[in-house]
Length: 135
Image (cartoon, rainbow, N blue to C red; front, side):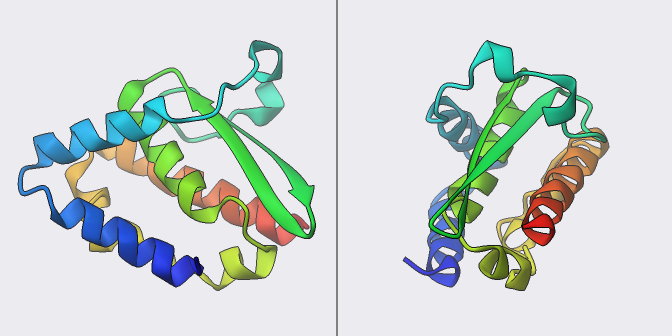
């Protein structure tokens, strides 16, 4: 599935819920689907700066694609990072860098988060882009 198709699928998925409470529940469920993140990998260098909650993001390269793994100590934030790595993991750096990440506006995520969580979202996106640029 192309990145555009994946983004469209997320927009469609979120549009099924009318209330933001239901969308938050969906995010929480996404967070529960994250691959286990090893405790020993929860190091300072993996923390995303600018998030009120603690968010760890790690990656590896396989066949020219970036595979992300992440965790957070807050359930909504864990859902947000899960959403992002669900979209952008297993993509080439070029695919990630070609994305405008407008999916977060299309689903109304940024404007329905508290200011501190919205700042965290921006920091998560910036870190994903930074990793893609570094490869």
